[in-house]
Image (cartoon, rainbow, N blue to C red; front, side):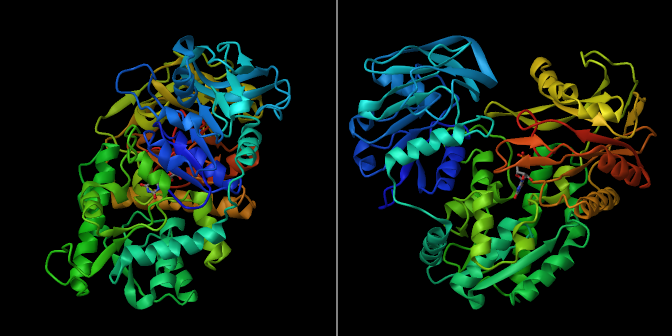
Length: 604
Ligand code: XMP
Protein backbone atom coordinates (compact mmCIF):
# COMPACT_ATOMS: atom_id res chain seq x y z
CA UNK A 1 0.00 0.00 0.00
CA UNK A 2 1.20 3.50 -0.88
CA UNK A 3 2.25 5.78 1.98
CA UNK A 4 -0.09 8.53 0.80
CA UNK A 5 -3.70 8.52 2.00
CA UNK A 6 -5.44 6.81 -0.87
CA UNK A 7 -8.70 5.05 -1.47
CA UNK A 8 -8.37 1.30 -1.38
CA UNK A 9 -10.58 -0.90 -3.48
CA UNK A 10 -10.93 -4.47 -2.29
CA UNK A 11 -11.43 -6.57 -5.40
CA UNK A 12 -14.15 -9.19 -5.04
CA UNK A 13 -13.80 -10.19 -8.70
CA UNK A 14 -15.18 -9.34 -12.11
CA UNK A 15 -14.26 -6.08 -13.75
CA UNK A 16 -15.72 -3.71 -11.22
CA UNK A 17 -12.69 -2.91 -9.08
CA UNK A 18 -10.80 -1.48 -12.02
CA UNK A 19 -13.68 0.64 -13.14
CA UNK A 20 -14.07 2.03 -9.61
CA UNK A 21 -10.32 2.66 -9.42
CA UNK A 22 -10.45 4.64 -12.64
CA UNK A 23 -13.41 6.75 -11.50
CA UNK A 24 -11.80 7.53 -8.14
CA UNK A 25 -8.60 8.68 -9.82
CA UNK A 26 -10.61 10.95 -12.09
CA UNK A 27 -12.05 12.51 -8.97
CA UNK A 28 -8.52 13.47 -7.97
CA UNK A 29 -7.73 10.76 -5.41
CA UNK A 30 -5.20 7.97 -5.77
CA UNK A 31 -6.78 4.53 -5.79
CA UNK A 32 -5.18 1.18 -5.27
CA UNK A 33 -6.69 -2.23 -5.79
CA UNK A 34 -5.90 -4.90 -3.22
CA UNK A 35 -7.09 -8.47 -2.63
CA UNK A 36 -10.26 -8.73 -0.52
CA UNK A 37 -8.56 -10.58 2.33
CA UNK A 38 -6.03 -7.75 2.95
CA UNK A 39 -5.79 -7.42 6.78
CA UNK A 40 -7.34 -4.39 8.50
CA UNK A 41 -3.92 -3.63 9.98
CA UNK A 42 -2.59 -2.91 6.46
CA UNK A 43 -5.59 -0.76 5.63
CA UNK A 44 -5.63 1.49 8.69
CA UNK A 45 -3.78 4.31 6.89
CA UNK A 46 -6.23 4.35 3.98
CA UNK A 47 -8.42 7.40 3.43
CA UNK A 48 -11.36 5.14 2.64
CA UNK A 49 -12.24 1.65 1.46
CA UNK A 50 -14.52 0.62 -1.39
CA UNK A 51 -15.70 -2.99 -1.52
CA UNK A 52 -16.23 -3.93 -5.16
CA UNK A 53 -18.93 -6.03 -6.74
CA UNK A 54 -18.17 -9.58 -7.73
CA UNK A 55 -19.80 -12.55 -9.46
CA UNK A 56 -20.22 -14.88 -6.45
CA UNK A 57 -22.74 -15.27 -3.64
CA UNK A 58 -21.46 -14.14 -0.27
CA UNK A 59 -23.04 -17.13 1.54
CA UNK A 60 -21.35 -19.68 -0.78
CA UNK A 61 -18.48 -21.74 0.58
CA UNK A 62 -15.16 -20.37 -0.62
CA UNK A 63 -16.59 -16.99 -1.70
CA UNK A 64 -14.16 -14.09 -1.17
CA UNK A 65 -14.28 -12.52 2.30
CA UNK A 66 -12.74 -9.36 3.75
CA UNK A 67 -11.37 -8.85 7.25
CA UNK A 68 -14.42 -7.75 9.37
CA UNK A 69 -12.14 -5.47 11.40
CA UNK A 70 -12.00 -3.05 8.46
CA UNK A 71 -15.51 -2.00 9.54
CA UNK A 72 -14.16 -0.87 12.91
CA UNK A 73 -11.28 1.27 11.65
CA UNK A 74 -13.44 4.40 11.73
CA UNK A 75 -12.63 5.23 8.09
CA UNK A 76 -15.41 5.47 5.49
CA UNK A 77 -16.32 2.18 3.81
CA UNK A 78 -18.54 1.91 0.74
CA UNK A 79 -19.86 -1.54 -0.21
CA UNK A 80 -21.12 -2.00 -3.77
CA UNK A 81 -23.25 -4.99 -4.85
CA UNK A 82 -21.25 -8.00 -3.54
CA UNK A 83 -19.55 -5.47 -1.25
CA UNK A 84 -23.00 -4.57 0.15
CA UNK A 85 -23.76 -8.27 0.65
CA UNK A 86 -20.49 -8.88 2.46
CA UNK A 87 -20.99 -5.80 4.67
CA UNK A 88 -24.58 -6.79 5.47
CA UNK A 89 -23.58 -10.32 6.47
CA UNK A 90 -20.55 -9.17 8.46
CA UNK A 91 -22.68 -6.72 10.49
CA UNK A 92 -25.56 -9.06 11.28
CA UNK A 93 -28.03 -8.42 8.45
CA UNK A 94 -29.32 -11.18 6.17
CA UNK A 95 -28.44 -11.81 2.50
CA UNK A 96 -30.41 -14.19 0.31
CA UNK A 97 -31.26 -14.78 -3.35
CA UNK A 98 -33.60 -12.05 -4.68
CA UNK A 99 -36.96 -12.88 -6.27
CA UNK A 100 -35.63 -11.87 -9.68
CA UNK A 101 -32.16 -11.36 -11.08
CA UNK A 102 -31.86 -7.68 -11.92
CA UNK A 103 -29.55 -6.87 -14.80
CA UNK A 104 -29.17 -3.53 -16.55
CA UNK A 105 -30.77 -0.12 -16.12
CA UNK A 106 -33.19 0.19 -13.18
CA UNK A 107 -34.94 3.11 -11.53
CA UNK A 108 -34.47 3.61 -7.80
CA UNK A 109 -36.59 5.77 -5.51
CA UNK A 110 -34.65 7.55 -2.79
CA UNK A 111 -35.95 7.72 0.81
CA UNK A 112 -34.56 9.51 3.89
CA UNK A 113 -31.79 10.73 1.67
CA UNK A 114 -31.28 14.32 2.87
CA UNK A 115 -27.67 14.48 4.11
CA UNK A 116 -27.02 10.94 2.88
CA UNK A 117 -24.58 9.63 0.30
CA UNK A 118 -27.45 9.81 -2.22
CA UNK A 119 -28.31 13.45 -1.55
CA UNK A 120 -27.43 14.50 -5.13
CA UNK A 121 -29.72 11.91 -6.70
CA UNK A 122 -33.10 13.64 -6.42
CA UNK A 123 -36.24 11.63 -5.60
CA UNK A 124 -35.52 8.99 -8.18
CA UNK A 125 -32.84 8.15 -10.74
CA UNK A 126 -31.62 5.47 -13.13
CA UNK A 127 -28.84 3.15 -11.96
CA UNK A 128 -27.03 0.06 -13.26
CA UNK A 129 -27.87 -3.16 -11.43
CA UNK A 130 -26.32 -6.60 -11.87
CA UNK A 131 -27.26 -8.97 -9.08
CA UNK A 132 -29.07 -12.11 -8.06
CA UNK A 133 -28.74 -11.72 -4.27
CA UNK A 134 -30.05 -8.95 -2.04
CA UNK A 135 -30.01 -7.77 1.56
CA UNK A 136 -33.23 -9.17 3.07
CA UNK A 137 -32.68 -7.36 6.37
CA UNK A 138 -30.48 -4.38 7.15
CA UNK A 139 -27.72 -4.63 9.76
CA UNK A 140 -28.62 -2.88 13.08
CA UNK A 141 -28.01 0.89 13.08
CA UNK A 142 -28.46 1.31 9.30
CA UNK A 143 -31.03 3.56 7.59
CA UNK A 144 -32.65 2.66 4.27
CA UNK A 145 -31.96 5.35 1.64
CA UNK A 146 -33.17 3.83 -1.66
CA UNK A 147 -35.43 1.17 -2.98
CA UNK A 148 -36.32 -0.28 -6.42
CA UNK A 149 -39.22 -2.41 -7.72
CA UNK A 150 -37.17 -5.58 -7.65
CA UNK A 151 -34.97 -4.77 -4.66
CA UNK A 152 -36.45 -3.34 -1.49
CA UNK A 153 -33.12 -2.55 0.17
CA UNK A 154 -31.31 -0.94 -2.76
CA UNK A 155 -29.15 1.36 -0.59
CA UNK A 156 -28.58 1.92 3.14
CA UNK A 157 -26.07 3.65 5.39
CA UNK A 158 -24.86 4.24 8.92
CA UNK A 159 -23.52 7.79 8.79
CA UNK A 160 -22.28 7.72 12.41
CA UNK A 161 -19.95 4.90 11.54
CA UNK A 162 -19.26 6.16 7.97
CA UNK A 163 -20.52 2.90 6.43
CA UNK A 164 -22.42 3.02 3.12
CA UNK A 165 -23.93 0.21 1.05
CA UNK A 166 -25.34 0.35 -2.50
CA UNK A 167 -26.84 -2.58 -4.38
CA UNK A 168 -26.20 -0.82 -7.72
CA UNK A 169 -22.99 0.18 -9.50
CA UNK A 170 -22.30 3.95 -9.34
CA UNK A 171 -19.01 3.32 -11.22
CA UNK A 172 -20.83 2.29 -14.41
CA UNK A 173 -21.53 5.24 -16.72
CA UNK A 174 -25.15 4.13 -17.14
CA UNK A 175 -25.81 5.09 -13.49
CA UNK A 176 -27.17 8.64 -13.80
CA UNK A 177 -25.70 10.16 -10.63
CA UNK A 178 -22.91 7.61 -10.23
CA UNK A 179 -20.14 10.20 -10.32
CA UNK A 180 -21.95 12.44 -7.81
CA UNK A 181 -22.25 9.54 -5.39
CA UNK A 182 -18.60 8.54 -5.73
CA UNK A 183 -17.55 12.18 -5.41
CA UNK A 184 -19.50 12.52 -2.19
CA UNK A 185 -17.79 9.39 -0.84
CA UNK A 186 -14.33 10.53 -1.95
CA UNK A 187 -14.89 13.93 -0.31
CA UNK A 188 -15.91 12.22 2.94
CA UNK A 189 -12.64 10.26 2.86
CA UNK A 190 -10.43 13.38 2.59
CA UNK A 191 -7.70 11.59 0.60
CA UNK A 192 -4.38 13.14 -0.41
CA UNK A 193 -4.81 14.81 -3.79
CA UNK A 194 -3.55 12.92 -6.83
CA UNK A 195 -2.82 13.86 -10.43
CA UNK A 196 -1.35 12.31 -13.54
CA UNK A 197 1.60 14.73 -13.27
CA UNK A 198 2.52 13.18 -9.93
CA UNK A 199 1.94 9.71 -11.31
CA UNK A 200 4.31 10.44 -14.22
CA UNK A 201 7.07 10.97 -11.66
CA UNK A 202 6.11 7.88 -9.69
CA UNK A 203 6.05 5.66 -12.79
CA UNK A 204 9.45 6.99 -13.86
CA UNK A 205 10.94 5.94 -10.50
CA UNK A 206 9.27 2.57 -10.79
CA UNK A 207 10.71 2.02 -14.28
CA UNK A 208 14.21 2.84 -13.04
CA UNK A 209 13.84 0.41 -10.14
CA UNK A 210 12.37 -2.39 -12.26
CA UNK A 211 14.91 -2.04 -15.07
CA UNK A 212 17.89 -1.90 -12.67
CA UNK A 213 20.91 -1.81 -14.98
CA UNK A 214 19.26 -3.75 -17.83
CA UNK A 215 18.30 -2.59 -21.28
CA UNK A 216 14.77 -2.80 -22.65
CA UNK A 217 13.69 -4.21 -25.97
CA UNK A 218 10.21 -3.25 -26.96
CA UNK A 219 7.66 -4.13 -29.63
CA UNK A 220 5.96 -0.94 -30.77
CA UNK A 221 2.63 -1.22 -32.59
CA UNK A 222 1.98 2.46 -33.13
CA UNK A 223 -1.10 2.29 -30.92
CA UNK A 224 -1.47 4.80 -28.10
CA UNK A 225 -0.27 2.41 -25.40
CA UNK A 226 2.95 1.17 -26.94
CA UNK A 227 3.76 4.66 -28.23
CA UNK A 228 3.44 6.14 -24.74
CA UNK A 229 5.32 3.25 -23.10
CA UNK A 230 8.17 3.43 -25.63
CA UNK A 231 8.48 7.20 -25.23
CA UNK A 232 8.44 6.90 -21.44
CA UNK A 233 11.16 4.23 -21.49
CA UNK A 234 13.24 6.40 -23.83
CA UNK A 235 12.86 9.43 -21.58
CA UNK A 236 13.49 7.63 -18.28
CA UNK A 237 16.25 5.21 -19.30
CA UNK A 238 17.78 7.07 -22.26
CA UNK A 239 17.92 6.00 -25.92
CA UNK A 240 21.05 3.87 -25.46
CA UNK A 241 19.19 1.55 -23.07
CA UNK A 242 16.08 1.08 -25.21
CA UNK A 243 15.54 -0.57 -28.60
CA UNK A 244 12.17 -0.53 -30.36
CA UNK A 245 10.91 -2.90 -33.01
CA UNK A 246 7.92 -2.17 -35.19
CA UNK A 247 6.71 -5.41 -36.71
CA UNK A 248 4.69 -5.01 -39.89
CA UNK A 249 2.26 -7.89 -39.41
CA UNK A 250 0.37 -7.35 -42.65
CA UNK A 251 -2.59 -6.64 -40.35
CA UNK A 252 -1.91 -2.93 -39.95
CA UNK A 253 -4.00 -0.06 -41.25
CA UNK A 254 -3.29 1.64 -44.56
CA UNK A 255 -0.03 3.65 -44.42
CA UNK A 256 0.25 2.85 -40.71
CA UNK A 257 3.92 1.87 -40.70
CA UNK A 258 4.98 4.97 -42.60
CA UNK A 259 2.98 7.28 -40.32
CA UNK A 260 4.42 5.80 -37.14
CA UNK A 261 7.99 5.86 -38.33
CA UNK A 262 7.64 9.50 -39.37
CA UNK A 263 6.01 10.48 -36.08
CA UNK A 264 8.86 9.01 -34.01
CA UNK A 265 11.43 10.57 -36.35
CA UNK A 266 9.87 13.95 -35.65
CA UNK A 267 10.17 13.27 -31.92
CA UNK A 268 13.86 12.53 -32.41
CA UNK A 269 13.37 8.90 -31.41
CA UNK A 270 15.57 6.95 -33.81
CA UNK A 271 15.99 3.64 -32.01
CA UNK A 272 13.06 2.00 -33.78
CA UNK A 273 13.65 -0.75 -36.35
CA UNK A 274 10.89 -1.71 -38.81
CA UNK A 275 10.57 -5.37 -39.84
CA UNK A 276 8.18 -6.65 -42.52
CA UNK A 277 7.05 -10.02 -41.14
CA UNK A 278 3.71 -10.20 -42.94
CA UNK A 279 4.58 -13.50 -44.65
CA UNK A 280 5.20 -15.17 -41.30
CA UNK A 281 1.92 -13.89 -39.87
CA UNK A 282 -0.22 -15.02 -42.81
CA UNK A 283 1.52 -18.41 -42.74
CA UNK A 284 0.78 -18.76 -39.00
CA UNK A 285 -2.89 -17.90 -39.60
CA UNK A 286 -3.44 -20.46 -42.35
CA UNK A 287 -6.20 -22.87 -41.34
CA UNK A 288 -7.01 -20.94 -38.13
CA UNK A 289 -10.70 -20.09 -37.63
CA UNK A 290 -11.46 -19.77 -33.94
CA UNK A 291 -11.00 -16.27 -32.37
CA UNK A 292 -8.84 -17.39 -29.46
CA UNK A 293 -6.66 -19.49 -31.79
CA UNK A 294 -6.20 -16.45 -34.06
CA UNK A 295 -5.06 -14.38 -31.09
CA UNK A 296 -2.67 -17.08 -29.96
CA UNK A 297 -1.20 -17.54 -33.45
CA UNK A 298 -0.64 -13.77 -33.76
CA UNK A 299 0.77 -13.45 -30.22
CA UNK A 300 3.20 -16.32 -30.70
CA UNK A 301 4.35 -15.06 -34.11
CA UNK A 302 5.06 -11.67 -32.53
CA UNK A 303 7.35 -13.42 -30.07
CA UNK A 304 9.09 -15.51 -32.74
CA UNK A 305 9.78 -12.43 -34.85
CA UNK A 306 10.98 -10.57 -31.80
CA UNK A 307 13.35 -13.41 -30.84
CA UNK A 308 14.70 -13.64 -34.39
CA UNK A 309 15.32 -9.91 -34.62
CA UNK A 310 16.81 -9.95 -31.15
CA UNK A 311 19.38 -12.50 -32.35
CA UNK A 312 19.99 -10.72 -35.65
CA UNK A 313 20.67 -7.46 -33.90
CA UNK A 314 23.05 -9.15 -31.50
CA UNK A 315 20.94 -8.08 -28.54
CA UNK A 316 20.90 -11.48 -26.82
CA UNK A 317 23.95 -12.24 -24.79
CA UNK A 318 23.35 -15.94 -24.89
CA UNK A 319 21.55 -17.99 -27.55
CA UNK A 320 18.50 -18.30 -25.33
CA UNK A 321 17.18 -15.20 -23.62
CA UNK A 322 17.85 -16.23 -20.02
CA UNK A 323 17.04 -14.62 -16.72
CA UNK A 324 20.63 -13.42 -16.42
CA UNK A 325 20.36 -11.73 -19.84
CA UNK A 326 21.06 -8.06 -19.98
CA UNK A 327 17.74 -7.39 -21.70
CA UNK A 328 14.13 -7.07 -20.59
CA UNK A 329 11.05 -7.17 -22.80
CA UNK A 330 9.07 -3.92 -22.64
CA UNK A 331 5.30 -3.98 -23.26
CA UNK A 332 2.58 -1.33 -23.44
CA UNK A 333 0.10 -3.47 -21.50
CA UNK A 334 -2.59 -1.41 -19.78
CA UNK A 335 -4.90 -2.43 -16.96
CA UNK A 336 -7.90 -3.69 -18.95
CA UNK A 337 -5.59 -5.99 -20.99
CA UNK A 338 -4.61 -7.77 -17.81
CA UNK A 339 -8.08 -8.26 -16.41
CA UNK A 340 -9.62 -9.32 -19.72
CA UNK A 341 -7.22 -12.26 -19.84
CA UNK A 342 -8.32 -13.22 -16.34
CA UNK A 343 -5.33 -11.55 -14.76
CA UNK A 344 -6.96 -10.78 -11.42
CA UNK A 345 -7.78 -13.56 -9.04
CA UNK A 346 -11.54 -13.74 -9.38
CA UNK A 347 -12.05 -12.54 -12.97
CA UNK A 348 -13.52 -14.85 -15.59
CA UNK A 349 -11.44 -15.55 -18.70
CA UNK A 350 -12.80 -13.33 -21.45
CA UNK A 351 -10.05 -13.39 -24.06
CA UNK A 352 -6.32 -13.61 -24.37
CA UNK A 353 -4.45 -10.44 -25.14
CA UNK A 354 -1.44 -10.86 -27.38
CA UNK A 355 0.77 -9.54 -24.60
CA UNK A 356 -0.51 -12.19 -22.18
CA UNK A 357 -0.01 -15.38 -24.26
CA UNK A 358 1.69 -18.25 -22.43
CA UNK A 359 5.21 -17.53 -23.63
CA UNK A 360 4.97 -13.92 -22.38
CA UNK A 361 3.44 -15.07 -19.11
CA UNK A 362 6.49 -17.29 -18.57
CA UNK A 363 8.76 -14.32 -19.17
CA UNK A 364 6.71 -12.21 -16.74
CA UNK A 365 7.05 -14.94 -14.11
CA UNK A 366 10.82 -14.98 -14.71
CA UNK A 367 10.97 -11.19 -14.14
CA UNK A 368 11.95 -10.48 -17.76
CA UNK A 369 9.12 -8.11 -18.64
CA UNK A 370 8.64 -4.43 -17.88
CA UNK A 371 5.18 -2.90 -18.30
CA UNK A 372 5.15 0.74 -17.19
CA UNK A 373 1.45 1.32 -17.99
CA UNK A 374 0.04 -1.82 -16.44
CA UNK A 375 -1.91 0.06 -13.74
CA UNK A 376 -3.36 2.72 -16.02
CA UNK A 377 -6.56 3.06 -17.99
CA UNK A 378 -6.73 4.36 -21.53
CA UNK A 379 -7.69 7.90 -20.58
CA UNK A 380 -4.80 8.04 -18.10
CA UNK A 381 -2.35 6.70 -20.67
CA UNK A 382 -3.39 9.52 -22.99
CA UNK A 383 -2.91 12.15 -20.30
CA UNK A 384 0.47 10.66 -19.48
CA UNK A 385 1.37 10.81 -23.20
CA UNK A 386 0.58 14.50 -23.26
CA UNK A 387 2.56 14.95 -20.07
CA UNK A 388 5.54 13.35 -21.85
CA UNK A 389 5.19 15.84 -24.70
CA UNK A 390 3.76 13.53 -27.36
CA UNK A 391 1.81 15.31 -30.10
CA UNK A 392 -1.95 15.50 -29.69
CA UNK A 393 -2.73 13.54 -32.87
CA UNK A 394 -0.63 10.57 -31.73
CA UNK A 395 -2.06 10.50 -28.23
CA UNK A 396 -5.66 10.87 -29.36
CA UNK A 397 -5.56 8.18 -32.05
CA UNK A 398 -8.41 5.75 -31.69
CA UNK A 399 -7.41 2.61 -29.80
CA UNK A 400 -6.35 -0.18 -32.11
CA UNK A 401 -5.94 -3.74 -30.84
CA UNK A 402 -2.43 -5.23 -30.75
CA UNK A 403 -3.36 -8.12 -33.10
CA UNK A 404 -4.59 -5.43 -35.50
CA UNK A 405 -7.03 -6.17 -38.30
CA UNK A 406 -6.60 -9.85 -37.36
CA UNK A 407 -9.32 -9.60 -34.72
CA UNK A 408 -11.61 -7.80 -37.19
CA UNK A 409 -11.41 -10.40 -39.98
CA UNK A 410 -13.94 -13.06 -39.05
CA UNK A 411 -13.38 -16.60 -40.19
CA UNK A 412 -15.58 -19.63 -40.59
CA UNK A 413 -15.10 -23.22 -41.60
CA UNK A 414 -18.63 -24.00 -42.70
CA UNK A 415 -20.11 -23.16 -46.07
CA UNK A 416 -23.77 -22.16 -45.77
CA UNK A 417 -26.52 -20.67 -47.83
CA UNK A 418 -29.07 -18.86 -45.71
CA UNK A 419 -32.47 -17.94 -47.05
CA UNK A 420 -34.18 -14.70 -46.20
CA UNK A 421 -36.97 -16.56 -44.44
CA UNK A 422 -35.93 -16.48 -40.82
CA UNK A 423 -38.05 -13.77 -39.08
CA UNK A 424 -38.20 -15.83 -35.89
CA UNK A 425 -37.59 -12.91 -33.62
CA UNK A 426 -40.05 -10.12 -32.78
CA UNK A 427 -38.61 -6.92 -34.31
CA UNK A 428 -41.50 -4.49 -34.76
CA UNK A 429 -41.63 -2.76 -38.15
CA UNK A 430 -38.27 -4.27 -39.21
CA UNK A 431 -37.68 -7.59 -40.94
CA UNK A 432 -34.84 -9.61 -39.51
CA UNK A 433 -32.42 -12.42 -40.24
CA UNK A 434 -30.11 -14.18 -37.79
CA UNK A 435 -26.57 -14.38 -39.18
CA UNK A 436 -25.16 -17.89 -39.27
CA UNK A 437 -21.76 -16.92 -37.85
CA UNK A 438 -20.88 -16.05 -34.28
CA UNK A 439 -18.89 -13.29 -32.62
CA UNK A 440 -17.53 -12.65 -29.15
CA UNK A 441 -19.54 -10.65 -26.62
CA UNK A 442 -19.60 -10.07 -22.88
CA UNK A 443 -22.37 -10.90 -20.41
CA UNK A 444 -22.28 -10.27 -16.69
CA UNK A 445 -18.64 -10.97 -15.97
CA UNK A 446 -18.31 -13.68 -18.60
CA UNK A 447 -17.68 -14.12 -22.28
CA UNK A 448 -20.31 -15.06 -24.88
CA UNK A 449 -19.94 -16.40 -28.42
CA UNK A 450 -23.25 -15.92 -30.20
CA UNK A 451 -25.06 -14.88 -33.35
CA UNK A 452 -25.86 -11.38 -34.58
CA UNK A 453 -29.33 -10.46 -35.77
CA UNK A 454 -29.75 -8.11 -38.75
CA UNK A 455 -32.65 -5.67 -39.00
CA UNK A 456 -33.82 -4.60 -42.47
CA UNK A 457 -35.90 -1.51 -43.09
CA UNK A 458 -35.91 2.09 -44.16
CA UNK A 459 -32.78 3.90 -42.97
CA UNK A 460 -34.94 6.80 -41.68
CA UNK A 461 -36.34 4.40 -39.08
CA UNK A 462 -32.96 4.58 -37.36
CA UNK A 463 -33.84 8.06 -36.14
CA UNK A 464 -36.63 6.56 -34.08
CA UNK A 465 -36.22 5.13 -30.62
CA UNK A 466 -37.64 1.72 -31.60
CA UNK A 467 -34.54 0.48 -33.49
CA UNK A 468 -32.31 1.33 -30.55
CA UNK A 469 -34.66 -0.24 -28.05
CA UNK A 470 -34.62 -3.42 -30.15
CA UNK A 471 -30.83 -3.42 -29.91
CA UNK A 472 -31.21 -3.72 -26.12
CA UNK A 473 -34.32 -5.91 -26.00
CA UNK A 474 -33.44 -8.59 -28.56
CA UNK A 475 -30.21 -9.83 -26.88
CA UNK A 476 -31.99 -9.66 -23.50
CA UNK A 477 -34.85 -11.84 -24.69
CA UNK A 478 -33.04 -14.22 -27.07
CA UNK A 479 -30.33 -16.35 -25.56
CA UNK A 480 -28.60 -17.13 -28.86
CA UNK A 481 -28.12 -13.46 -29.88
CA UNK A 482 -25.51 -10.99 -28.58
CA UNK A 483 -25.63 -8.27 -31.26
CA UNK A 484 -28.18 -6.36 -33.33
CA UNK A 485 -27.19 -4.85 -36.69
CA UNK A 486 -28.98 -2.67 -39.19
CA UNK A 487 -28.40 -3.40 -42.89
CA UNK A 488 -27.45 -0.14 -44.65
CA UNK A 489 -27.00 -1.69 -48.11
CA UNK A 490 -30.39 -3.44 -48.48
CA UNK A 491 -33.84 -2.48 -47.19
CA UNK A 492 -35.32 -5.99 -47.34
CA UNK A 493 -33.78 -9.37 -46.48
CA UNK A 494 -31.70 -10.99 -49.21
CA UNK A 495 -30.54 -14.60 -49.38
CA UNK A 496 -26.83 -14.73 -48.66
CA UNK A 497 -23.90 -17.14 -48.65
CA UNK A 498 -21.32 -17.88 -46.02
CA UNK A 499 -17.95 -18.77 -47.51
CA UNK A 500 -15.30 -20.64 -45.50
CA UNK A 501 -12.38 -18.26 -45.12
CA UNK A 502 -9.37 -17.89 -42.85
CA UNK A 503 -7.23 -14.74 -42.69
CA UNK A 504 -5.40 -14.14 -45.96
CA UNK A 505 -3.40 -11.25 -47.36
CA UNK A 506 -6.18 -10.57 -49.90
CA UNK A 507 -8.79 -10.29 -47.14
CA UNK A 508 -6.51 -8.06 -45.05
CA UNK A 509 -6.02 -5.82 -48.12
CA UNK A 510 -9.78 -5.64 -48.64
CA UNK A 511 -10.47 -4.70 -45.01
CA UNK A 512 -7.59 -2.19 -45.09
CA UNK A 513 -9.32 -0.39 -48.00
CA UNK A 514 -12.70 -0.46 -46.25
CA UNK A 515 -11.15 0.79 -43.01
CA UNK A 516 -9.44 3.62 -44.86
CA UNK A 517 -12.70 4.69 -46.55
CA UNK A 518 -14.42 4.87 -43.16
CA UNK A 519 -11.47 6.63 -41.53
CA UNK A 520 -11.32 9.31 -44.25
CA UNK A 521 -15.09 9.87 -44.12
CA UNK A 522 -14.88 10.30 -40.35
CA UNK A 523 -12.06 12.84 -40.60
CA UNK A 524 -13.78 14.76 -43.43
CA UNK A 525 -16.97 15.08 -41.39
CA UNK A 526 -15.10 16.20 -38.27
CA UNK A 527 -16.17 13.06 -36.42
CA UNK A 528 -12.76 11.62 -35.57
CA UNK A 529 -12.50 13.19 -32.12
CA UNK A 530 -16.18 12.71 -31.36
CA UNK A 531 -16.16 8.94 -31.83
CA UNK A 532 -14.17 6.95 -29.28
CA UNK A 533 -13.31 4.05 -31.56
CA UNK A 534 -14.60 2.87 -34.95
CA UNK A 535 -13.76 -0.76 -35.74
CA UNK A 536 -14.55 -1.82 -39.31
CA UNK A 537 -15.11 -5.56 -39.53
CA UNK A 538 -15.00 -8.07 -42.41
CA UNK A 539 -17.52 -10.94 -42.35
CA UNK A 540 -17.38 -13.93 -44.70
CA UNK A 541 -21.01 -13.36 -45.65
CA UNK A 542 -22.14 -12.03 -49.03
CA UNK A 543 -25.08 -11.98 -51.38
CA UNK A 544 -22.87 -13.55 -54.07
CA UNK A 545 -20.97 -16.68 -53.02
CA UNK A 546 -17.40 -15.69 -52.12
CA UNK A 547 -18.37 -12.06 -51.48
CA UNK A 548 -18.14 -10.46 -48.05
CA UNK A 549 -19.85 -7.99 -45.70
CA UNK A 550 -18.52 -4.97 -43.87
CA UNK A 551 -19.73 -4.09 -40.37
CA UNK A 552 -19.48 -0.52 -39.10
CA UNK A 553 -18.93 -0.56 -35.34
CA UNK A 554 -18.54 3.03 -34.04
CA UNK A 555 -18.67 3.34 -30.25
CA UNK A 556 -18.69 5.94 -27.49
CA UNK A 557 -16.84 4.89 -24.40
CA UNK A 558 -14.48 6.23 -21.78
CA UNK A 559 -12.51 3.22 -20.66
CA UNK A 560 -13.67 0.39 -22.96
CA UNK A 561 -15.31 -1.51 -20.09
CA UNK A 562 -18.73 -0.39 -21.25
CA UNK A 563 -19.68 1.30 -24.52
CA UNK A 564 -22.65 2.61 -26.48
CA UNK A 565 -23.00 2.38 -30.24
CA UNK A 566 -22.46 5.86 -31.73
CA UNK A 567 -25.50 7.20 -33.58
CA UNK A 568 -24.36 8.04 -37.09
CA UNK A 569 -26.47 10.28 -39.27
CA UNK A 570 -28.24 9.05 -42.35
CA UNK A 571 -26.08 10.97 -44.82
CA UNK A 572 -22.85 9.62 -43.38
CA UNK A 573 -24.20 6.06 -43.44
CA UNK A 574 -25.45 6.36 -47.01
CA UNK A 575 -22.24 7.90 -48.36
CA UNK A 576 -19.96 5.40 -46.66
CA UNK A 577 -22.17 2.46 -47.67
CA UNK A 578 -22.10 3.56 -51.32
CA UNK A 579 -18.31 3.79 -51.24
CA UNK A 580 -17.89 0.43 -49.52
CA UNK A 581 -20.25 -1.29 -51.97
CA UNK A 582 -17.90 -0.23 -54.78
CA UNK A 583 -15.07 -2.30 -53.33
CA UNK A 584 -14.63 -5.50 -55.33
CA UNK A 585 -15.94 -8.43 -53.28
CA UNK A 586 -18.13 -6.39 -50.90
CA UNK A 587 -21.91 -6.63 -51.39
CA UNK A 588 -23.39 -6.13 -47.90
CA UNK A 589 -22.92 -3.40 -45.28
CA UNK A 590 -24.16 -3.56 -41.70
CA UNK A 591 -24.19 -1.02 -38.87
CA UNK A 592 -23.79 -2.48 -35.38
CA UNK A 593 -26.30 -0.93 -32.91
CA UNK A 594 -25.26 -2.98 -29.88
CA UNK A 595 -23.89 -1.54 -26.67
CA UNK A 596 -21.25 -3.26 -24.53
CA UNK A 597 -22.49 -5.37 -22.82
CA UNK A 598 -23.89 -7.52 -24.43
CA UNK A 599 -21.58 -6.98 -27.43
CA UNK A 600 -17.86 -6.27 -27.13
CA UNK A 601 -16.30 -3.38 -29.02
CA UNK A 602 -14.36 -5.71 -31.30
CA UNK A 603 -16.08 -8.56 -33.12
CA UNK A 604 -13.38 -11.29 -33.17
P1 XMP B 1 -13.57 -5.30 -26.46
O1 XMP B 1 -13.66 -5.91 -27.81
O2 XMP B 1 -13.19 -6.30 -25.40
O3 XMP B 1 -12.38 -4.26 -26.52
O4 XMP B 1 -14.80 -4.55 -26.06
C1 XMP B 1 -12.05 -3.36 -25.53
C2 XMP B 1 -10.92 -2.50 -26.01
O5 XMP B 1 -9.71 -3.27 -26.08
C3 XMP B 1 -9.16 -3.21 -27.38
N1 XMP B 1 -8.53 -4.51 -27.63
C4 XMP B 1 -7.21 -4.74 -27.55
N2 XMP B 1 -6.18 -3.92 -27.28
N3 XMP B 1 -4.68 -5.73 -27.53
C5 XMP B 1 -4.91 -4.43 -27.30
O6 XMP B 1 -3.95 -3.69 -27.10
C6 XMP B 1 -5.66 -6.62 -27.79
O7 XMP B 1 -5.42 -7.79 -28.01
C7 XMP B 1 -7.00 -6.08 -27.81
N4 XMP B 1 -8.21 -6.64 -28.03
C8 XMP B 1 -9.13 -5.64 -27.91
C9 XMP B 1 -10.32 -2.91 -28.28
O8 XMP B 1 -9.90 -2.36 -29.51
C10 XMP B 1 -11.13 -1.97 -27.41
O9 XMP B 1 -10.63 -0.67 -27.45
